[in-house]
Image: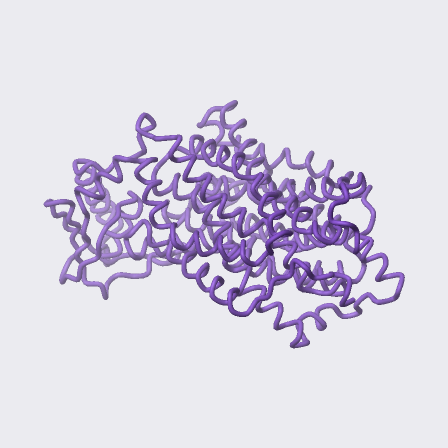
Length: 550
């Protein structure tokens, strides 16, 4: 099994293992990413008690909640996987994911049950995160332990396609439902349909996974009585293993994660929220780019069997870090040229006493931004205006080209007066930026779709570079007896925390600094840290015999 010739054709059993593992994992990612694809609608449905900017950031935070708990799912299900087996553990994870997703589809919204709606929504997102925390490590380990030496990168690359295919499937179902029902009906109730139909995918997945056999490596280890009695303490209580876990996280997965989420999710959010491209068009463009680039997961996974995993992953991190700024600026010019033209020809300046400016992040909706600086920032952020902060005194002012608009402080004002001032100020700012050429929405007639798709495809190819070989490398870093636990934790800390928090963190940075591109500093810095640490301290694993250290 371990020493199979590298040129042996894939057997029927190996094809079944890859197909069954991948299909179930596609459905799990579909369930998980429906929420992210519908974040703007979910913000209105479940966080209607907040202002639009805070509601969207809160919706992103609820999206991130599923990522935050993924490492805990990795611990719980990784331990079970190393103790009782791979097959039964990720049978449980898919049941948990499927039921949680279906319940999101039937959950009453804020208008029906008030604050209980977002609370239950977040609980369901947490359950989804726990399930996914156990799913990926199981599927990757299961496939890798069926793969012959010399083909592990190619075999596990199929598992790596599942996250992108799950996102693609979610976009496809959303687009189909949106088109069939119309925008108004979809925003009102039709958005629930993609969640509800997931129950059918759940049935297919459970049926497939019930027919699968246990991993041969685990069966052999169990027959020899070598299974771990305490995989958590072995993985993280012994420095020789903990050191590898830390290096895997910082020197591989953290950079992979931010490149993944920038190339797929942040790009989608940037198109819809910042560049004001309508949701249906943005979904189509992203879906096309995913379709074009997805085969590269297998290309880079197979290439990693020949030249190594580490060079490809680190090259992806470095290239992404060096090109994100020009690519996203080119995306602005292609998707919303009026916005790009206005930014260049009518720069906006916020003149304010910076000590009065708060950090523009209000996930709970409890903070009240009353200073003239904060009020001005909120209005500019909601209009996707790129602006420069300049130190000033007194009441904050917004300067659009040569026109100056004075903000106001709502502190101590009666509610009616504050509301009137708010409407007056927003109208003045909106009129000024409109006159300066800042568009309320991207003009579909000016949208350069081929260029947008080309940029999005390149961003996804970066994803395939860092993500295609990562499963094989993580599997090869740890012994069989603690593999499920050990590889799952760094993977889900990296992708759950570093990656999952990227959209929320990036938009908070943009809201604070006023520059629509400054959110990119987060993935760039993390990717560069991974490049340096990986280059200096992580060794390549393509020639490792994964059974030798059992």
